[in-house]
Image 1 (cartoon, rainbow, N blue to C red):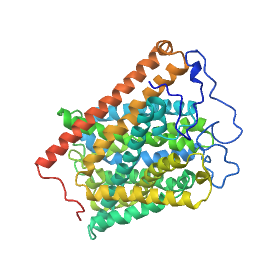
Image 2 (tube, one colour):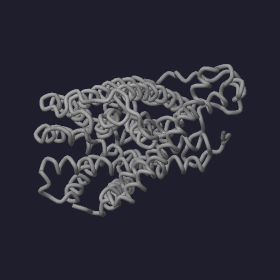
Image 3 (cartoon, rainbow, N blue to C red):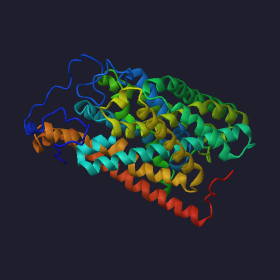
Image 4 (cartoon, one colour):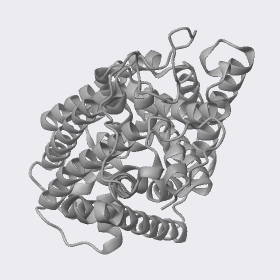
Length: 462
């Protein structure tokens, strides 16, 4: 593990003195608060600033998390149950919900010990030095842009279903991208959180309405498989659907950095995981039971035309608001990297607003072009998810604990005095590696099969 003591310009020194890393005590992280945020955090003292970031309470952060994570990914879960069987699918989904809660807790503990960390790039610097910062920071931007492109395609599909294909799909993508750009423009997440109330509510309501529609107009009632034998590629692709349905941890550092009291962040994670796991399992089981084998992905396409239109229509606010949150996170990472602790972050300067506007437009344009101009974009999203989301949501969390325990609780002795946590965190790192390698293999194999079968679409196809 990296033992860096020199930080790049603008990144504050760590809260703990590494000269004492071989000691068995650490400074109490539950400090008294004279104002919002943590001491030495990324935004510093904001009382006299024009733009204040550290304003969010944990319920608003929970809403942001729900909007970003509980989104179009859940619509693939009924097909996952069909691929591997009802019982294995439910067990995997429930386990991953618990696992994501555990890794979320590890991530929050790391943030509280390192308040200067604003994003995965900053965490990468602490763990692995400058190279780690560039890889994890760049991966965050790439994954956020790909996730936005995926939301644009979901919005395109929704608008196509609602209009019965009366307008070119690329035009729908352009309309959707414009809405995403407008919603991602606020400089602070606090302003975006009010939109996310509508976004979070819309996907939950859409899921409930979809289940009602499946029950009202069933297709193959009860025609389900309890367990199914599948080849590795098919099974792994199906399992990655619930894996990446929980993949939103890459923005947790950014969200927590704008909390009034970051020590409340775990309350937001508990709320997120309870809502997500409950909705995922309920939607998958109910939809699969009423639609039966052959359920589509996204599952709304398996509903009757009327219920499909209603469900897609209700989900549209979530699609573009979740995309806006991803674009905001990508732009905020670069913006803070450029102007950390400068007046352009906290004041209404021409340079600050000019750069922010450029970053928002650039990120949205990239997401739009990726989504409609790259025939293999869906496979690219799968590769990006395997390369980065597998680590951001799962594997890196174990590394965070291993790093801090080694440096602040006695080195290797600190690990071995905590055998249960040590074992869990090593397994967490291994799980991240397995999901990364397996996901990339399955995605590339599927891409090859689709290419051989001539199933890849043309770019900018209506």
